[in-house]
Image 1 (cartoon, rainbow, N blue to C red):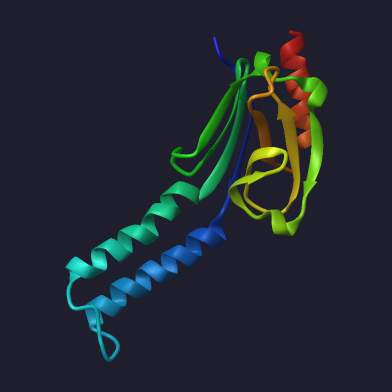
Image 2: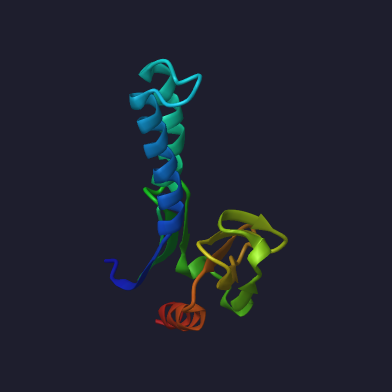
Length: 155
C-alpha cells in the first residue's frame, strides 16, 4: 500500500498571468471590435483563445510527489509527467545541481537529461539504474528529497 512521503507544489503564476492576460485581450478585442482590422468573428478568435488556454492547462504548476513506491513529477493537469519507481533510482548518482537562468523553465532538455523546472536555482538529479532516464526536478529541497529516497530504498 502506498503512503505519501513528500509533496511539493510550485506555482507558475506569472506564466498563467501572462497567457491569461493575452486571452482576455483577445476576447475583449473580438467583443469590442478593436483596431482598424478587427477579428471579424468568434470563429476566428476561438482558435487563438484555445492556443492560449492550452499552455495554461499544461504549465500552471509543477507538483513533485514521493510515496513509498514511486517518485513522480508533473506539470499542470499532467500531460507532461514522469513517474519512476524508487527502487529503480541509482542513488549513488544523486546530486543537487544548480541550474543557471539560461537553462530555462518548463520541460527542458540539456546535457544531463530532461528536467522539470519552474524557476532558475537548485534541482535534484538522479539517474535510474539502467541509465535510460533520470529524475531531474527543480526544487529547493534537493537534500531532503535525496535523504528521503535513501530512507525508502533502505526500508
